[in-house]
Amino acid sequence: MTIQTALFVLLPIVASIALTQRRRVAALIGMGLLSLVLSATYALENAPDVAMTEATIGAALVTTIYVLAIRRTGRLIVVADEAPHLLERKGERLAGLEYEILEGFARELGLDLSIRFVPRQQVETILLSGEADIAAGGIVREGDPRFYATRGYLETSLTRIGRGRTPTAEEFYEGYFSDLLDSVREGKDITAILDLARFMEVMRGDLTGFTVERIPGKREYVFLVSKRRENIHTKLTAYLDAISARGDLDEMIKRNLK
Amino acid sequence: MRRKNPAFPVTCLFLTAAFCFLVAQSVRIPSGFGNPEYIGELASRSGALNLVASVYLDGRLYDTIFELIVFSVAVLGVRFYLSERKPSARPAPIPESHVVRASAEVLFPFILLLGIYLTAYGGLSPGGGFAGGTVAASGLMLCTIAIGANAVARRIGQASLERLEWGLPLAVIALAIVPTFLGNPPLAEILPTGRGGGIFASGSILLYNLLIGIKVFIGSWIVIHGFIEHRGEI
Image (cartoon, rainbow over all chains, first blue to last red):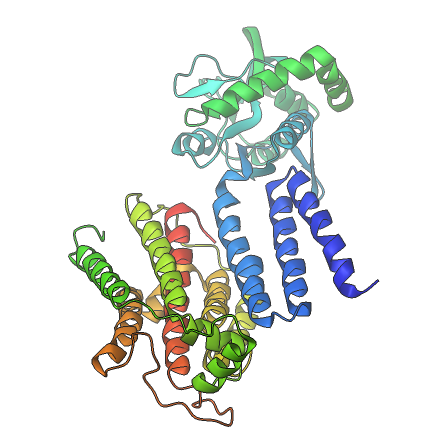
């Protein structure tokens, strides 16, 4: 078998690999590869001029332009503050219930999940600016007209904790949750409203001297979706319904929240 | 940004007029076309060792001019439609690692040199303006990844390049028409050709290759820069 025959056989194989990729970046690399194989074929068939042009345009320039095009659209951008058991860093990796849901959702859409951790109060600003598609990280929010909220995926409650003076916090904490946790451990004066997952994490430390007051009423964790991403909202809601109906959601909850 | 500029309608008019003129002059197909001798005759006439170059820059120059116009229209389309969008308001791109920046600094001159070499020696060896121009543009691409698109645009003088980009296809067409005023059919050679395979032996093929190379280089850069400026960051 000559090398030409090998390349001819390789061409449709590489082409179908490029076509069947779900992730766009992978499909793009497949296309670049196809260009290279094609270019080698041209070179061996005594058409070096065409081979050279195919290599520079097909493999280099076109690939780059596509990369630019999908750089924004090929990613599902999530903005969040860390929440224990829901969305947290474990060493180099990310883990948690929300992470598993979002990862599965991104895979279904063929997008790359990209999570940006920011201080609590910036989550909404970034979602409003359209720089992120989804806000996550233990969000308990109802009826905010600036965003789409998905259906709740887990029940929770709110607790107000405070120390030093009567807790008056009407808002969630500010900054990073990890900083808040450090402040509690060091015994600083703080006051904040926490959701259940974060409250449980705080409870693991020493809470003497804190006033703890549960805010009555049942609440649910939701994801917020930017108003500019209506289709993502529809699809995420459908995805949550689907995994809930399949029983996968319960599995995930058991696995992450023991 | 270009729509209010008179350069656009004037250029369109000029292109149309030039082509009506060329068609009216009836591009002559040599009587022996299809014979193997024709290629040999063409090669010896054009003085180019690369037969492909002697076909597409001499015997079939009008094909190449059309190709150049297709490319110009593509670049124009990108600029036209992107000019309606606001440039993305993202902050300056995140600088890449020092490795990328350092290797871009080292590699860029060589990539540019390779592009110039391919363009200039297109009449002798595989290459030519289209391949050489894109090779050089991919060098700029590398710099873009290293230091950001706007920094590259500032350094190479984007505005004057954009004007030059329009001048070049006009220059190619003007050169193609020149022979008619010397009593030859249009698209004939305008420079004396030699023998022996030197770089200048191919006469006008070298000239066309250089013009096309610069044109493709600038055009590719404009497309890349436009996409980066209006859609996202690199």
